[in-house]
Structure formats: C-alpha cells, structure tokens
Length: 155
Length: 234
Figure 1: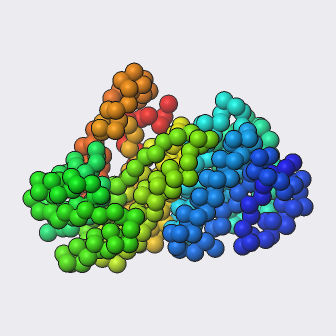
Figure 2: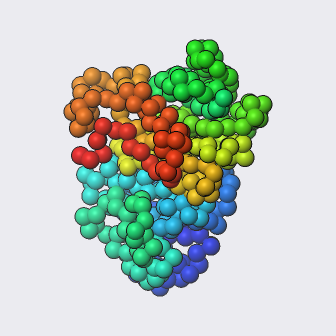
Figure 3: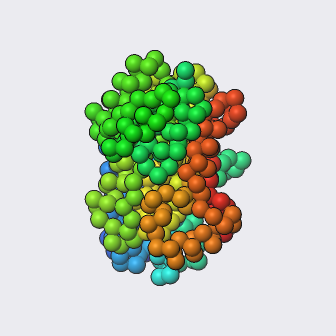
C-alpha cells in the first residue's frame, strides 16, 4: 500500500523494517504514516512547534484526499517518562488523531495511533501500521504495542 | 503570604479563578494580554497586575521578574487560552499556529522558566480541556490541550517530590464565549451532559484551588481532572 512515510532519522531501524514491508513510499494523498521524533527532538519549543505543524500539514493533506492516517508515538512519551518535549508531541498527536477521526468518521477514513513501547518488536509495530492503513472499523483508537503500558495510566 | 501566578485572568474562567485564589489567601500575580487585567487585580486583597503576551520572551520575563521580587512561587495556574475553530480540511496555518503558541507553547515556556522559583510543596495546575479527548472542529485546540496533558505528566515526574503538577480538563463552561453559541445548539449540548447544566467558572476555580492546596490534595500529581458534568461518558 502507498503512504507518505515520515520517519525521523533517529529511528532508522523502524525505517528499515517499514521498507521491507508492504508499505511503499508515496504522497500523503494516498496515506500517511507519521512517526514522532521522541526524545531526539530535544527540549526546545521551536522544535516541538515545527513537528506538530508538520503533523497538521500532512494530516490535512491526507484528510482532504480521504486517505488513512497512522501516527506512531512511543508509549513512554504518552506517560511523560522521557521529557516534556517528547511528551507534548506524543499526547498532542493522540488528541489530534481523536479529533480528526471524529471529523472523518462519516467518510469511513481511519485515523489511528500506534503507541510502541520499548519492549515491542519492530515487526509487530509495522504489522499494526499496515493493519491500520486499511479500514477495519477502528478509528480514533490508540493501539499499545508491548507490555510497558500494563498497570500504567490510560493515555 | 503564599504567592500564585494566574494567567488569562481577564477571560471567562480567569476572573472567577483570580477571585477564588484571593479568597484562599494568595497574593495573586494576575496576567493577561487584555486590558481587563488591572481591573481584576484591583478587586483582590493582594495582587499584582501584568499585561503581557506570554508567547513573547519579554512578556514571560515580566512574570518571572514579579515572582523574583516576591521571593518565590507557591502556585502556578496556566489558564490562558484561545480558540480558532475550523474543520481540519478548512483550517489555515495561521489558525493552527496561533492556538498552538498560546495554549501549549506559552504554558511549556512559562512553566519551565518559573520552575526554579517554585517552593517546596508548591504546585502547577494547567487548564487543559475535555477536548483533549477529541472534539469536532478543533484539531488545533485539541492537539494543544492534549499537549498540556503530556506536559503535565512529564513535569510531574521531573519536579517530584517537591512540586505537584496536575491539569484540569473543563467541559462546557458558562463563559461569554459559550453563551455566544446559538441557543438551540447550546441546549442540545447541555442535553448531552449527564448533570444537565453547563459548568460554572467557579466549578473550575474550586478545582484549581483544591489541586493547589497541598494539605487537601497533597498526594495527587500527574493527574488530569475532568470537570465536565460527566459529558465524556456518553
């Protein structure tokens, strides 16, 4: 399947697994996979604003085309465990996904979030990305991959 | 005397918030971009008025300077916020940028810059929104208020054990902005609230004062308190 793959250079391992999968790099008009930078973003507001702005622009492009969207964040960042900047990006993306999902629900366009924990295998993460790029009835959902979330606060 | 900073005091919730903090015995450093900030401060027993744009370095520096001159800080209430609603397909970059800068950027930057002045046992309370769970026409606002939730969790871990950090997520609150919604639509919104009424600014202010008081809520940190009349259940 075609999708624009926004994967930061800090996550080359994930990029390699994605490239070996059935997801082929395309434009956001056909689909969007946006991977948050995590702690590599640093602690500067300008970097946070820039990343969230990129989320907005690419998501808007995808939604205008009726294309599916999958955001990928670190589960640890949803809990604020790796610094404020990474946390703001991760939780901001989750809330934005929920709102975009409300707006696109009638059209049946899925917008979901994969929250990958440190212990999750990259193969499992990419399998969930593939699954969520096609309509499955799930939208506005966060899928937590790995066991790091068990017993912790809900995102 | 305990010192509190409250932002957005000239807004719908902010005036009641400042008054409630004054009643609770705080010297309130009242901050807002709007002219009404001086009037709010004058109505309190002990207050300082600062008219400032918190998205600017100079604006935030004026708040930090006031805290320095008073010797420290016991409670920071990040209340300032704006809306620029539109469906994502229609939303402009300017609408997105403005909301993100005020609702999240200024909260992050002011909290970070005031953190060194927070006394042991002090607290930060940030006003998020029930929209962090998702709300039609508010991609920018929802993202910014979701970001406040993440910031709250991160700061709760970073500043523990000396400072507690929590957030409040208000639902539909009876403010001039809410009362400007056409009555028919507003009635339908109220009907979807289990408690069958809009929240009052005082409902939010009371929650803020409670979360700021270490004697009453001293074991709470990293929490998001939804003050929404049960709206997020249905």
